Image 1: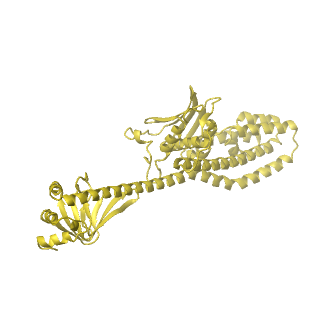
Image 2: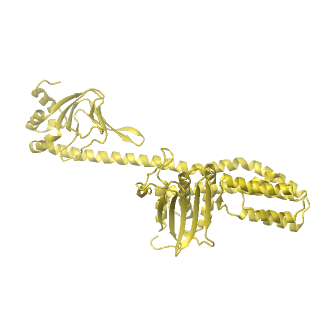
Image 3: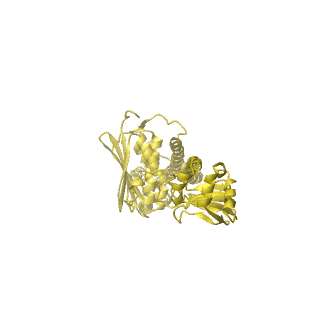
Length: 470
């Protein structure tokens, strides 16, 4: 440590930046500066302490700046002997962006903040060098912040995509594992049916009921209680006819009604009906599994296409008519397991002869999926989600309504912002509603939200025909 002014002047003169300025300015710095020695770990500035004391001329050692990022504490800058940091002339810096501490035994000269105006007046050459240094520092920190934000965005986008892909991927695995047993049951039921003698009229009646059952869209995702009641109702009917009760579960998953089953009973005698019902149930179960695999695979493809569009990795296909009712049904098929896991009821009410929207089917499916997924996250166990699709003038209106706790008023205006989320860490990326807004606006539409405790409603408005400047 220097013991007199002369020693400090000599050390300042040996400094990489200070040594190039006139001697009288170096002497001014020695007269107005405070020499400080920092042991390893000693904090020079801290975000929690307050304002930065002033300008620091690093004579020896090393100091580092650490900031808190989304992934934890990160070192973004360091200064060595010959560098200058802290408050520079004309800088608006008050609070430091993070914590600056010594990483080696370090000597610095502090020019207090209240001396900077005198420094500008008395040390013109030094001030000029510091202005250039401030510009370089601004560019560095801007670049660092942008790079950190891009990495955080990429991580969140990857996490969001993985989260979105999980449901359809799990549906494919689950259905594929069940398919071999279903095919075996179908083959056995077909052999049993073929061993009996049926008239052409009986086979026609059986095919008609099977066709009606498979054509019924899954516009309702029932809660476990509702599904159990439906299975029990069909089981009671099967017991009365002497048929295998195992047929109840696959038949309950379809839209088949007791009146349809009554039609079959009137067409077959008591020895034929059990085989016919077994064949019907096995065929429905197999077709359901195959449909689930197809819908889930299409969902994965649409997710990839949506991410490509979001990141501008690919050109979008040509816009055209979009069957919204079909898209909603497909979305329900993918999210049905999530709804059942929460004992939730999800119902879709589509207006008769609903005309198509104009746009991109895969992207609109992404909108329906994100809105339904958010609604299922919002509701409590046993809650309900209602989806309606209708027209108002030349617009197609789709509403997602849930009975969750609602969106707090202080964050309602931010829910469509990129990366804003109210979910726990690891459960949400904040991309869902941002993607919804981008897609809807791309379709010349609008998305709005109204919320109060017990009722939150997202409304999507889309054009029925192509609009100019698309």
